[in-house]
Image (cartoon, rainbow over all chains, first blue to last red; front, side, top):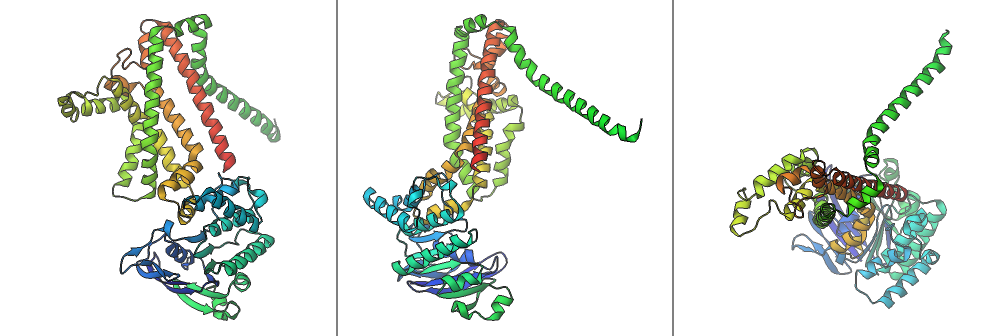
Length: 232
Length: 271
């Protein structure tokens, strides 16, 4: 379970958000460009420091500004797929998936087993030896997802994972994400612009507007003002 | 002559003018280089290659240039990386200082190094008290080359690190990679072609360095007389030595430019 209460002064407004995501739950974070969605993910992942607040993941405090607790980004064990998927183009698919495992000094046999497992389940096993720079958008997104899940994260965060994908790839990534979130029983946050994404993948939705939570609830129950005023 | 007949004629004239201009510029750049090859016979060229002065200048140039290159890469790469990734007071001044040697006359750079590190220089006098001398040594050649040639690498590295999408490094960090591992496995491989191209340009500039070297290191055969200095001395006495070294430098310069072009093409293809 993730419990985050964070504040950060941004250029145009103050980000002030409280998020709770249960294990096995997919929280869809929505809002217009610049509403603070990606900044929230960056703070939770440890890439950005909050001015004030705390982040508790599975009962462990990974950040609390009052006491100065701030677990470094590389030790947080959070699977984070950034907006452009950021697969390393100079590495093969296999090396991409193994990247996080190698950083953790795990034995070669375990790395090999886990990499094969995730490549198979993400339907990228036949691309194992292909340079990631030569993949299509959908394939890259699946590699990024496999790479993030291979580290056995305590939390998975996906920032605009469907933006550059065609309908078929979007559907595949959505199905895979839902399947493994339920299977691994970890909390998941998905940032998206599209209301359709929230109903298809999300268990709950949260709409941000200028750094504040505008609305939170079941994806299908989003009030009209959120959609009309382009909050979401 | 009607108005309508003027247009094709004008076009022809434009083509002729453009052709003359392109030919003139090409010849202006190419003829002095070609002239070197016509001034000496192949037999004389190969015979002069065995001249001790040529061999000595060649080895000294290669040694100092490779040491310069190694220092520039080892110090310059992390410097450029941290310079790009962090904001600090006076960053803009440092930016200007990196570019300064590109416009500064090399002789002035040499005078500056001499005034600072010379035997009675601002810092040199203190080193001299411990028996450490920089000026008129092989080390001075390397110092002059670093001063003059390093901006070619630093500018290139700076621009590459600035252009690299930060999401790659951020992803690596979230996957558990330390900043050093991220630099080694993600940042450097993704900028490698550009960095090599910058290193090759630095090599070329260091190899051709003359002004700062003669001011700070002098012209001592076997100690500080690099290839460009040997050309200068050769042209005042044994012209064949000057011509032979000049041709060697032309060949090396061509090899450098071809390498840079290949790397740029590879970079464009990858992008």
